[in-house]
Length: 296
Ligand code: CP
Image 1 (cartoon, rainbow, N blue to C red):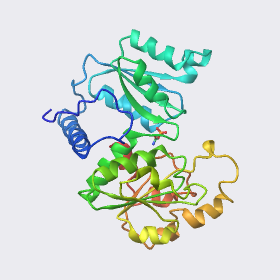
Image 2 (cartoon, rainbow, N blue to C red; image 1 turned 45 degrees about the vertical axis):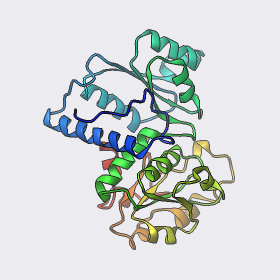
Image 3 (cartoon, rainbow, N blue to C red; image 1 turned 135 degrees about the vertical axis):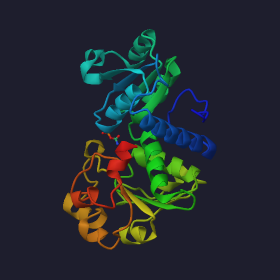
């Protein structure tokens, strides 16, 4: 390993990461990928380390990728979910963290449905805490892989125009990407219905190149790449959308709409509501980077 990783104990969000720190992480990720390929799949960089994934919300991509990555780097990996652990008997987050500390965890990767829960865990734990998504707040590991994937495709993020479309209001992925992309010099445009992208939303990113556009055709004409977001029905009350059909017509990356943009790279953090925010033919078609995001 030739790159020094940024000297942070925890990864909670990208909000206060400098461009230099992000560059260092992306460079390290690239080195890990190359070394992993050369070694035929097994490295020992984390030998002797214990990683614990602690998931209070469902996950496919994030949990599986942390387990695979930890094992590929030689770590011991233990997976816990809220439903299969003593959390289901009422154990608090604080007591759970204390228990994992006592078991000498080196890193705890946490997904939680409450914004701020992962930051609280970082104050209680001796281990490194990695935020694998907390409520609406942040999903920094998803954003990092999105930065990596976009840069791989676009060559640089400096002055690139990245459109994020969909359920912005409930999206921790959108928030973390706004911080990470703009830190690396990209411009971000957010697009979605006003119920899911309230006027004034971009003011949370004051000083960063984040703008709002409610017209998807104008937004697509502007963009160098587009990321669709999942409609998060589980976080919505009623009244956010008239109907899924109308949503698809106005904000979906449908086959008909994307026919005018056949070379525009398309991303989605997953899981996808197929035929709503993104048509399956686009998600699995030649302009899609969805599979590449998961690989990265
Ligand atoms: N993108 C993402 O976080 O997916 P999972 O919920 O499957 O982990």
